[in-house]
Length: 216
Image (cartoon, rainbow, N blue to C red; front, side, top):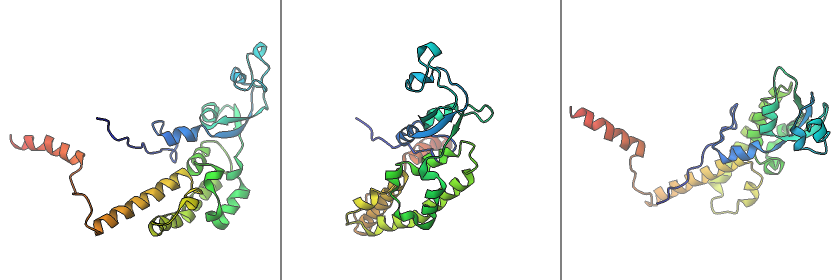
C-alpha cells in the first residue's frame, strides 16, 4: 500500500535551504546576476561564449557578467576572497522597494518571481550594503499582503479566486490553501460532518512504550 506524500517544508527563509524540499530546489535554480572579480577556471565549459576555450582551461575572465543559479553563486561566493560580486535582481532594488512600500497588494509577485520571499532571504547571504533595506522590505511586503490573502481565503470560499492566487508567490499560495482548508474543516464541523477525533500516531506510540513500564 502506497503511503500519502507529505510535503517537506521549505527552509528558504532561514540561512540555508532545505534540499529535501521541492520548493527550495526550484528556488535555488533561479538565476542571479554576478560579476567575476578574478579569473575562474573550468566554469567556461558552461558559458562557452564567455571563456577562452579549451586552450585556456575554459577560464571565465575577470570582469565577466554572468547569470548563475543561486546555488552556484552561493557556492562560489566567499566573504574573504573576492571571487565574484552579486548584483541585486531588479525586483529587490530600491525602485521596486518603493512600489512595495506604497501598496504591496498591487504587485504580481508570481510573475516577478515565484519564490519572492525565499529568494530574497537568500540574497542576504551576500555582502550587500542594501541588505537591511531588503530584509525590511520583505517583512513589510509580507505584512501588507498577509491580511488580504487570509481574508480572501475565508470570505471567497465559493468564488473564483484564480485571479488572486495567480498573483501570489509560492509561500503565499500555501497560506491561502491553508486558510481555505481551515474554513472547510470548520464548516464540516458545524454541519456535524467532522470525522472522529483520534489520537495522533506520536501519542499512540508514546503510550505503547510508556504503559508496559508502569506494569513493573
